[in-house]
Length: 83
Image 1 (cartoon, rainbow, N blue to C red):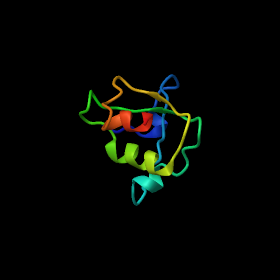
Image 2: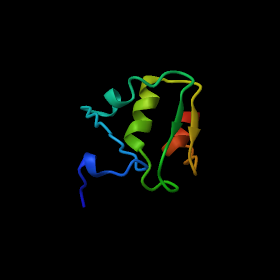
Image 3: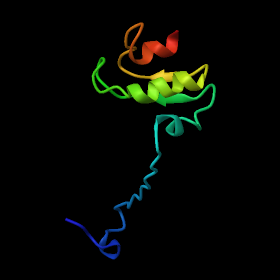
């Protein structure tokens, strides 16, 4: 159920999110700099952002700190960024 902003109680917070749309994975990762920290979703090798991982590898970004529950394998997933 939607509420009007004026009807929200003072203790409730209103969060506004903006969406950003990009044409491809390369554009999505263009602002990731060397030394950045990234949280990556997925469970094991399922649901990982493989297109974004490939784009980061192509871009050549280095010294990343990646938070994930799985490092992938040598030739797939986050493991690609360890090569």
